[in-house]
Length: 224
Image (cartoon, rainbow, N blue to C red):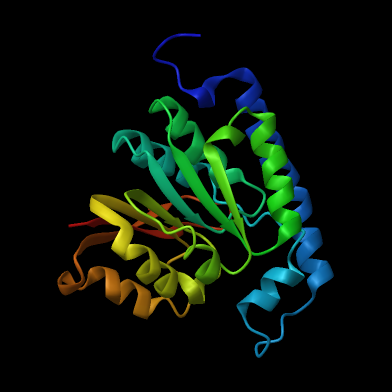
């Protein structure tokens, strides 16, 4: 392999990523149909349980953004909120591999999803870089305590973004990156206000990536 070629460009890894996106196109509509219309009073975690068969994965374009952010910043310790089946974890762990190593601490509420993510990461040879924490992220991210975090990726229950970020903030290095998915969804205003208020120690901006149903919104922030 070319010394300047990314782990992502290995034929086996590229084929695995392609297969996961194809599977997501099949499984996600099936999971939505099986879950039915969510009960607004049940809460986000109940919705995630009902959708346990769905990938709800980031699109490829944002996957490339995550890889570029992690690679360009030479991240060594990354925290991910919301593993699902491990698609985004592959993009992030590939950057760690190309950075020479490191650790991705990833959280997932559904045990069955975490197990499948383990298998998906093992299939592409990246599982040795990943630490899984299964359960409520507001509990699992407390112990073992975090330190020296270079990057955070938020892609779990949207209503928990701000609480998770505040939990991780004391461990963020100066210059650490925070990448947040789906920030164009309803109810994200308090989270975005936190990131965009200079008093909270970030420089932050919204970005869009193209998607099958139109552009998708994200927020990219740097810790001062």
